[in-house]
Length: 273
Ligand code: LIP
Image (cartoon, rainbow, N blue to C red):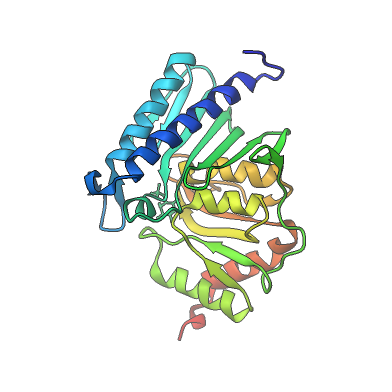
């Protein structure tokens, strides 16, 4: 394995792993009638045997090559390692779509060295799209450089908005109300990773979710930075990799208006009568 940069060997492995994981996930997706599913905390917090099988495969491949690396995965949690590298893995992001037969789901793998992400890979198996980024190495969609949309605005673009049971209902509804009042429009597909990747490739103007987990966003946030966009610090001063926090990311020219809408939604009780 010829490697030019210190993280090349992990990038080459991660790329092979995510493509293998895509095939495994697709094999489950092709016959949902046999898919075993369950609930975690409630009816909207679902998990399937596919999530667990894909994560187990990913962990086995990492351990076989880099046994001293740590892994933080959605289904099995944190396995610390002494190498200073941590793989942050969501085996199937958009599990709700997956179990309902909707193609808006992906696999997300980030690799952190110390406190920062150095590699990010997101694969949407149902379209074949592979989004990758390397710190200071750029961001690519299917091998072609990708950039955020440098012309979009709140009133002309689509904004990804995440909502989940961990977030107070009124906080989401206040933000949506203010966004629509400002002439914007939202889209939610239940996969934070995929929507962050779509910010990085210029399809979405930005993404906001008041609470998201590290395995959903670490890869996508690196992609957006490498694609010329802006990202708020994650998980922020009140969160950790294990607890998560708010995710805010956008094309740079959208940042200020997006932050104003978020600030108002967090303070403006009058937004929803
Ligand atoms: C999903 C996240 C999404 C959030 C969903 C869910 P999962 O991850 O990507 O941003 O809104 O509630 O948590 O559970 O499909 O891997």
